[in-house]
Image (cartoon, rainbow, N blue to C red; front, side, top):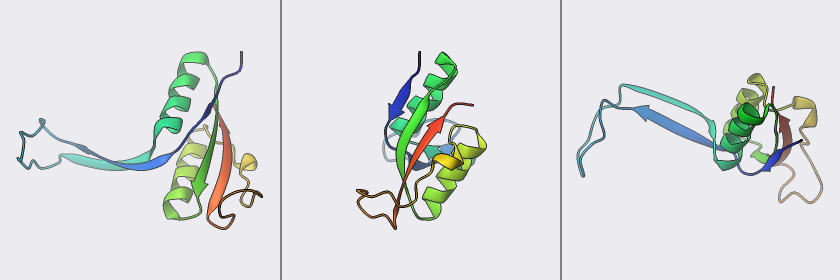
Length: 105
C-alpha cells in the first residue's frame, strides 16, 4: 500500500516552559526552537513512521523560511530534492512558490 498526504507546511516557533502560565501570566521560556510543521508536514512524518512510508505534496514559499523548510525536510529524508519544481505552470506565482513532493526515508 502506498500513502500520500497533500497539505501545507508552515514554519513554527516552539518554546518549552516549566509549566503552563495562568491567564494573563508571563513565564520565561527555558528553551526555544523553530522547525517546519503544519498539518501536511506533521501528517506525512507520522504516517511514514506508522506505515513505513508516505509521500508529501506541498507548496513551499521561495523565501528564507521556505528554503529552510525544504532543507530540513530533505535532511530528515522526507523531501526528495529532485522532485522540487521551482516554476511550475499554474502556480499562483512561479517566482515565489515551489511545489514539492516528498517521501519517507
